[in-house]
Length: 450
Ligand SMILES: Cc1cc2nc3c(=O)[nH]c(=O)nc-3n(C[C@H](O)[C@H](O)[C@H](O)COP(=O)(O)OP(=O)(O)OC[C@H]3O[C@@H](n4cnc5c(N)ncnc54)[C@H](O)[C@@H]3O)c2cc1C
Image (cartoon, rainbow, N blue to C red):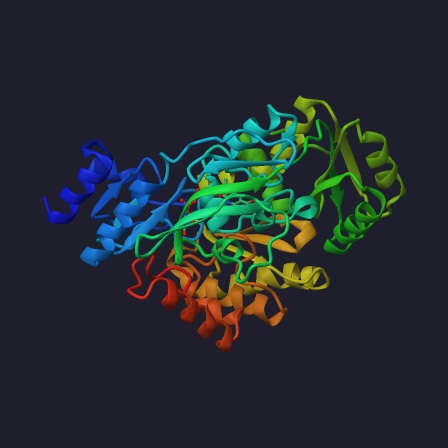
């Protein structure tokens, strides 16, 4: 055992420094099974002081660290590059008291999204971010990737929910701003700088988050549409006519066929359609009538079904939410997560098939995503051997339509090479300078983002 491992055992206890291959394995491969690497060891500290001591020890020994929360990230940012220490935040699970006056709560970085939601709901409030990986994704990972999900349309992305952070910098020092002031203009906003930094600038240990009103009554519509244009027309009508709108999601016929086969789901309509939109409204009272009014008046609706009971809502959401799982069950996809201005969406969808076919003729394309933000998850199955070509072709197409090469999953290791497609040279240089200022030795998440 090396000096570093001995030191790490002294800090976190021998049971929480994993060196055995079998024990390390779950931390070494990502959720998609596309990214993997061998860690020197996995370290699981129990609190901020232990995290700081681990980071300091690694910095002194010149050993790089890969930071990991729930390991549900989709861009290879949380799995080891090889030979690094894998720092898992999964034991930082403290749950503070919900403050109903501020509508805020302070939680450990390792608390899962689902646990945070349950905690807030038990106090008559809710958390503004939701996504299908809720049972495993951690608050630290959500902040680090500035995760989006299905409620961005109503509450914004993760960074909008963050009122303060505590984080360990690359030299082991701790920055802490957890009061959660609604107004605080005292210079550079480190909290917002760390949101979306993907573990490259600091290790988040505690987060103070804003909470939103609990909206217990929900109505969900699954709407068939015959074009992207119709989907956008419906979105415009929903935005104008439904103050209670909380989600607007989108998928195509191929995705419908895949999730139906994967989950044994029944056909929702008598015939197949080009695409499908899921609209959700939520409030303190049942918003079904408002939703029905908007659907009834919109010529964009080819067919629709609506539910407002718990079982029916879950049944309709399953057509959209099981996409990621169904794609993963079908193979190891090339996963791209892009966004374009909404007026470019129809053109992008139209061009994607031919672009992917040119790069990987035998591939199967599944497109779904968050309609409100022009955010498409482009999943290409059967293209493992042509991953670079497919990625290059799709990301260039997106850039040509003024889009982003990473809408919500982050850049990670998967997209670092293509960052200049979305960020100008001066922007990337400024990012490198910030990285160098906070982590001059490049200890934290080397190879991720920049
Ligand atoms: C089924 C499924 C559905 C998903 N849906 C969505 C979606 O709708 N929207 C969306 O945005 N994402 C989605 N994701 C992606 C993923 O859930 C998010 O990126 C999530 O934020 C990752 O959290 P995590 O705790 O698993 O982080 P990890 O995967 O462990 O890490 C992700 C990144 O954050 C860094 N990191 C993790 N914890 C910390 C910390 N404490 N301090 C500093 N850096 C840290 C890691 O180094 C890595 O770069 C989905 C994933 C799956 C599997």
